[in-house]
Image 1 (tube, each protein chain N blue to C red):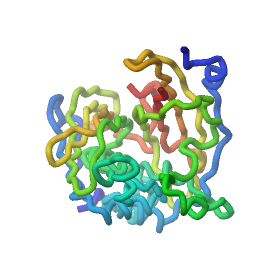
Image 2 (cartoon, each protein chain N blue to C red; image 1 turned 30 degrees about the horizontal axis):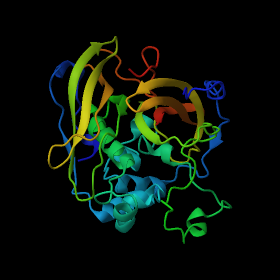
Image 3 (cartoon, rainbow over the protein chains, first blue to last red; image 1 turned 120 degrees about the vertical axis):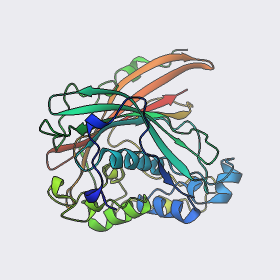
Image 4 (cartoon, rainbow over the protein chains, first blue to last red; image 1 turned 180 degrees about the horizontal axis):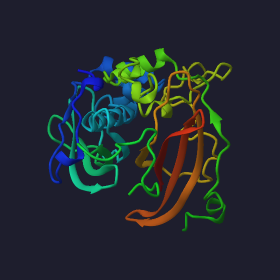
Length: 167
Length: 171
């Protein structure tokens, strides 16, 4: 299924304290990490050179790229926002390593919602859990969602509704 | 000892000159990026799916990875091929800003914040501009720490695409 045919999420239908669908990625194998490093031309050896990662940098194993994890967070939120929504803000901290072979589950939960004239804003808390439910990447996000039967919808390009400050 | 010296404080607000990515947004690079990030969104290649954007676009965070080593750049991988301590990191992490004048301080990633305004269309040339948004000192358990917030705007064709704020912790 593509985003073009994805179901649209409407502001009217979401409620605080509810979770959005998780996005699972993995197991994230050596070839998957190598392909990501090559795609963005990042040659940091801890992502593909196991001997260097373990012997030199004293890591337990190859590290999953933080840049790859942030793609997954954005994908999770955009899929939920749907083709007429907009992921406005996202923030995260890399608090713990994730290692090759892990399957990651990106989660988010609605913390608040605010109505504007033409669309609504939804605040979320988010994170990334691994196979043993250890949190590695806590963060927050703000997603703009259209109303079901009112308002002009979410503009593109997105114009922030007020001063553009990440909170 | 205070870490926030007058020399460092003078950097607050300093902006870089605009820096252009060495390549335009190319379909092949977008394809490799999307496949490598396990993202099957059709807006990266299908005109119909991308109608909201007037044509196929790159993944939202793609512009951040566009600043690479151009033709004529010395090849660090070759130069340091015999160095067992070379970690493989090549190029600047912040485009166009002078390095912080600190010596012997560890660098920690204090988090990333991103605002999205538009997506880069195929064929666009990405321009980045960075600034030291704020630098402040806090007391930590093991001594003083500097918090350095660097904001980078990525734009194309006169349209701001995304604004990224990275917090570096130096201690």
